[in-house]
Image (cartoon, rainbow, N blue to C red; front, side, top):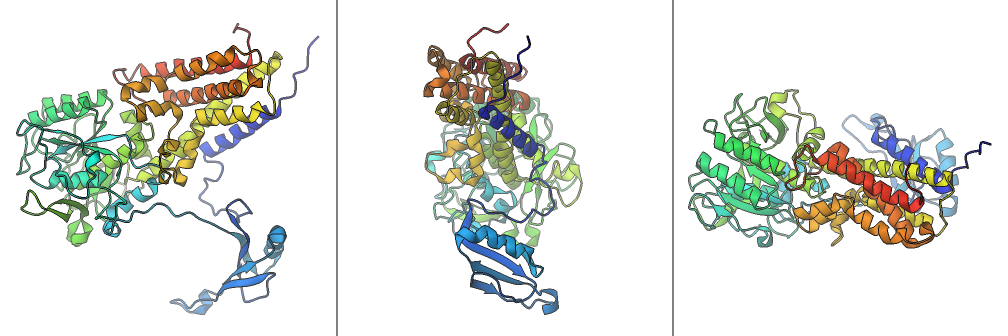
Length: 585
C-alpha cells in the first residue's frame, strides 16, 4: 500500500517561499528593473498619519494640510511646472483608506506615505568636501558597511611619515630596504600621500578622509629621498610585506625594464593570498609600465574629475580598472588631496594636491581592503568584485579603463547583500531537503518553541546578518562583524591560520555533537539552534566553494574549493543528523 506524502509543515513552506524570493532577487527579477518603481505602500518606515500628494492644480484634500509647496517658476515659466506638492496629516487608523481615495482621484498625480530615511555616515573632517575623488570612488556609501578593519595594506613606496592625520595605532612597524633598518619613515612625501588615500584617519574632525580608514598600514621603504629604487629592493619589499601579514600591496611606482626578480615576487604574493595593486604609469601613451604589466598584478589607470582618462595616464591591455588620479590641468583642486610632508621638508606636514596613476592606485587598494574586511580573502575574488561592479567609463575603451571606473560601494553591496542572498538560498535548499526527508520517515520533531529558533539560527549561520551591513552596521560600536558570515569571524578577529577553524565544518560539528545526544533534539532549544547553525554554515561553505571567495594560508588555490565542498557536506550531514537518526543508505 502506497502512503500519500504528508503535507509539508509550515516551516517547510516558509523555507520554500524564502528561497523563491531570494532566487528572484539574485537573478534580478524582483526589484532590479530600471523601470520606475510602483507607488510606495504603507510600511514600517512610514511616518504614521502623514501623506504626501502631488496634485495637478490646487484642490481640497482630506486631512489637515501641514505643508504645501506651490508651483515654482523655472527657466521656462509656470506652464512647464503646474504640479502642487502637499503634505497632509490624517488619522493613522484611516491612512490606508485615505491613500486609496486619493489615488483614485483624477487630479492626483501620485499619493504616498511619508517615510523616514537614514543618512549615510559622513565624516566630520573639515576638508572632506574637497575630496571629490573619494566620492567618485564610492567610498562614503561603502563606509556604512565596512571601513577596512582587520586588513593590512602594505605601502611599498618611499615610506610613511607619521603625520597628524594618520592614526598611529594603525601604522605598523615596517622595513627600510634602502637603509637596511626598521626606520621606514618617508623623506620624500610620495608614500605618505599614498598612505593617506588608503587609510587617512576619518571622522576625527581633522583634515581629510581615506578610503579604508580602519585598515592597518605597513610602510615598506624601497624608494629613496629622490623617489628611485632598485628592482631587487622592490622584490624584497613585496616578499617581506606578504610574509609579515599584508594582504593588499600598493605599488605606486613603475618604470625600468622587465625584472624576473620582481615578476617572481608578484607571483609569490599572489600565491600567498595578496592582491597586488600597481600604477599603470604616467607615460601618457599606450604601454603599461612594470610592475603593473606583470601577470598577477592589478593594473590601475587614472581619471580626472569627469571620469575621463587623465592626459598623463598610461594605458594598455593589462589595465584592470580605472580610478581617480586627478587632472591638475583643470586646476589645483582637480588633484587628489591628502596630508603628507610639506614641500622641501622631511619633518613638517601639509595638505597637498597630487596627481598621477600613483594617486589612482591607493583608491583601488583601499577598496580592496574594504572588500577583504568582509571575509573575501581570495585575491581573484577581490579583483572580480571590483571589476564586476565597476561603473561604465565615458568611453568604451578597455585599454584605457579596463573594466570601468572603480565603485567601492557597489563592490561592498555585492559582497554583503547579493552574496548574502546566495548563502541564504543555499542554506535554505539544504535545510528543505533535510526537513523533507526527516518528515518523510516520521522523525521530524519540530514545535512552535524551537521552529523560530531553528530558522533564526540558520540565518545567522548563513551570514544573513550581512544584509544589514549597508544599513549602517559599522556605525554601531563593536558590531562590524554584522557584515561577516560567522565562518569568517576567526580569520577576521584572530589570525589567518584561525581561518581553518571557520572555513570548515568543525564548529557546526562540535555544536551538533551534544545536541545529537538528546532523545528529541528539535524539542530543545539547543538542538534547534545546532541544526539551524549547521545548515546555515553549510550554505556559507558551499557559496565560498562555488564563488571561490576564500584563500587560506598554505593551502593551494586548486585544493581550496574541494576542501570547502567537503566541509559543506559534513556541516549539512551534522544538521541532517539532528533531524533524522537513521544512517544514510
